[in-house]
Length: 403
Image (tube, rainbow, N blue to C red; front, side):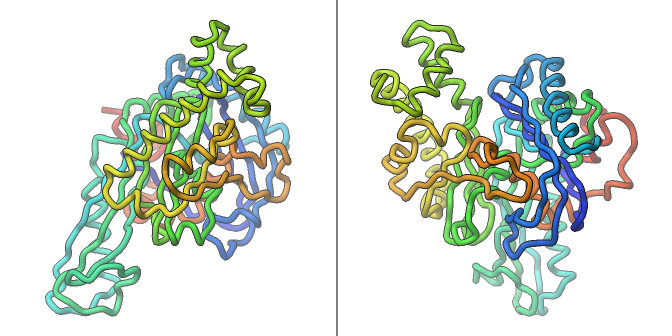
């Protein structure tokens, strides 16, 4: 299973859907001319936004398909009404199925030849073939750099000569079944997912700065049911991870500690975020939960070798980024500068949505600006050539659904 995006043009009207555990959001925009920044949406115009409380999901997993469909349809309906138009296709971000990274390398013999476009194509094709038939859901697959005869750090190898051309690849995957179930819920809502991006990747595109992406940044999205991570270095996407613990788990911990209903615990959590001195015991519990999340992500980064050192700054986003003392706690755990990442405001964006809680939603659109970097975009079957029919409309990458 693999995702495929189609090229987008200025003036195109597209819709994004962010499926979270606490809320589901839909965004309809009209694209403008490309910006100098590959991640910037400054020239987009927001036509409609809708969001709905998420039902039927826990930790990214579908527990009640009918409830998920209802939440999706509710968010889309609100966006359609505001935009004054209906939509059929969606670009989707997901945070389910244990999102994780894999790095691998592929070598092509040059025999002294000068690197040309055909060599690059052959090498990229080899990289794609390595994962094209994976039993996992392949959300992203792309190069992170080239080397010639052991000399690395090459971004554009054309024109170099040598004996061997080597490429590093980064793949982000998730368990197939949870992704299949979630996308089936969207299809059953009479909508067609065109492509899928990992939510931490989308959140990073919406909140990080180009300088940070080049120098090294880790973007942590503190969501409702999950806390996810995307790391960029040298301008490349090099690592991703997600754990099934977020703001909902913090509310549950408050509920247990103070013997109150979950709804009351949720209200208490939001109150502590603004008035932590009123409830010192509750604030301390939230602190412990946040530190646990940060320590888990730090461990994952350090297990990946160079990833922890590559990230020179930490960006917190998602609704949990506004929790009491989150930035200070993250700085203590990671030992790096920390800031809160907020999506850049664009034309027509309601002010209340210039908020970390909606980062992934805006990042879905930004992801289409750099979709050409994905191996699936280059080598998977064109959208028009894919088999017709219900779930196959997602793309050839969902052929497993027919197995």
